[in-house]
Length: 401
Ligand SMILES: Cc1cc2nc3c(=O)[nH]c(=O)nc-3n(C[C@H](O)[C@H](O)[C@H](O)COP(=O)(O)O)c2cc1C
Image 1 (tube, rainbow, N blue to C red):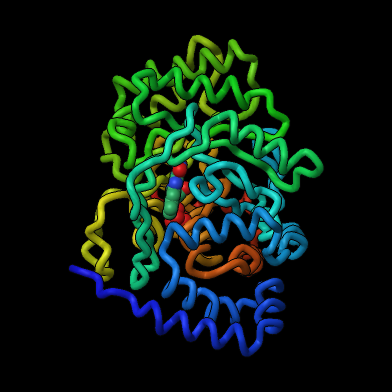
Image 2 (image 1 turned 120 degrees about the horizontal axis):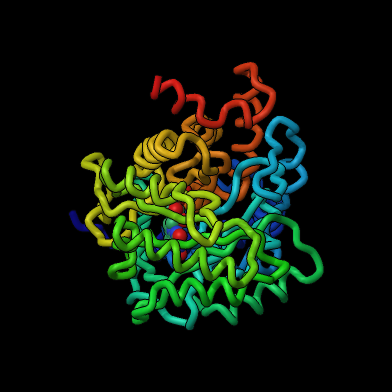
């Protein structure tokens, strides 16, 4: 399938007329995050005129310079969504997935959108530019994205400085750091340990994610295989013990693992280790390299990781599997295709304790988190529950009976 060239000039002139005709009206609606205005005006124009990577950069800059609407008070008022996990408090379970704020430039602005936690990264030890452009593709008809960024990162030191600069006055949300490895590095364990060394004692970081599931760094996903994973986890956890780091450490896994690989991973995650340390959680899942036959977009054969709607059920099934295989003993952050309250509800019921999203934000605009949080709170109380703790894994438990 090939894509027709976009009618850039037509849309640009439309945009110019619209902006010229009512700049004030536009600015007010942008700033207030008017849902209808974003969905029927801003997002379609943005998608027709600006490529995926440029609109990603634009969104980061808007968050960085605080030109985004503030939904944070609206999203923190639902008592039935509050939870504590590890030693952290969450106003509600919806967080921003890794890959959006790769360099930790915009956490306060993103917290304004209502996310109860923001995962920064993936961050590599040394700066690297990632793959050649174009490397981000919108699959509009499928409400999906394919990306092959390949860990473009400013590197540990720059990201540490960004976090210090932006969070010194006020840290408005829980912050995770997602660690990756440099493309040319031959010492995988060493790269992740460097991340623990740099961010381990940062007061701006609350939890760590070891990302071994990005499809865009050659060989990375092989670390998930049993014989490599076991010594790999020992290496990471020994270093964590030596560095005296007590913050939670999670592992992010791929949706493309087969049944026996899922079993192996579950076993590795709950296995007692000599260091006395353990893996504190799983992030389920990263993007998929599979291409469901249902995909309609002309970009569907681009290489890279697929995210968004086509990933949703694959990721929910994997959450259910990992919850059952670990007997609910290890918290799961569920991520993949969440775009509304019902999607989030299903992932919690499948076994996730927290939820993340990314792709839906690119399609549904800045009021998304607030809408999901409202709807989720309503769904939970409509079903007669008074807290999210009561629903975590209830569908998975029913499946195993
Ligand atoms: C453009 C893009 C870049 C991403 N970069 C990263 C990354 O650097 N590290 C990572 O762990 N996941 C990355 N992800 C994966 C997301 O964190 C998430 O696991 C995946 O997109 C599924 O969630 P979604 O369907 O809500 O987008 C990226 C996703 C997208 C769309």
